Image (cartoon, rainbow, N blue to C red; front, side, top):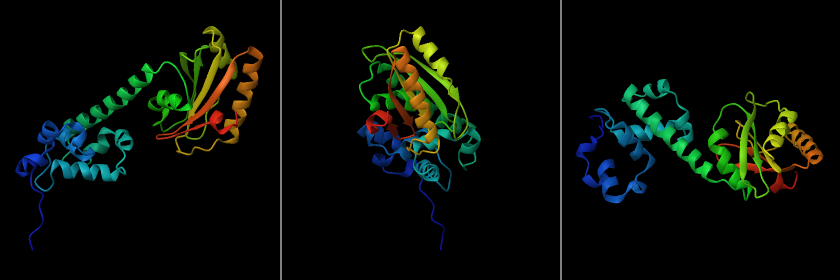
Length: 231
């Protein structure tokens, strides 16, 4: 029995070719694997660009955020992916991340915990280490400033409360929102998370600066102290 070999994309029907499909039906009609195939350009004798895209996606759990974390060396480990193709894939995913960040910057007024997530997820949602940020707001809940207060390891970071409120006074802030990420993906507030929230809230009361919320951010979701009624 002869081995099964994938047909090159050029031998597919025009409607099934990724580039032609985008031209005919628009970019939203393409699967993630087909979009990656366009970036790759060509596969190998034994595997089409689409099949290669499917294989790469399968190895990262079909998660584009996980794909974006792959280094150039990890991408070039795939047969059919050289340095040029790896750079193209990496550049496209970085543009997608920057697009999310740009959209977040356009959201200047915070109306809900979800708005905070939209602002902070592109910054800290996909990190492999923990960071603690503070958003500084005015009376209209518009963001005046946002600062990375500290940066730690996989499981925690040290927060300087005095520095947080020094910055708040410098920007004439009336309210702050605390934010940090959990690289583990868990949305449960730890005892340390609750303790720093209480300390920040108490310090803010003495300065007439409200701690409006504390948001724990992960790759795809968030936890709000205010929404949970534990602020």
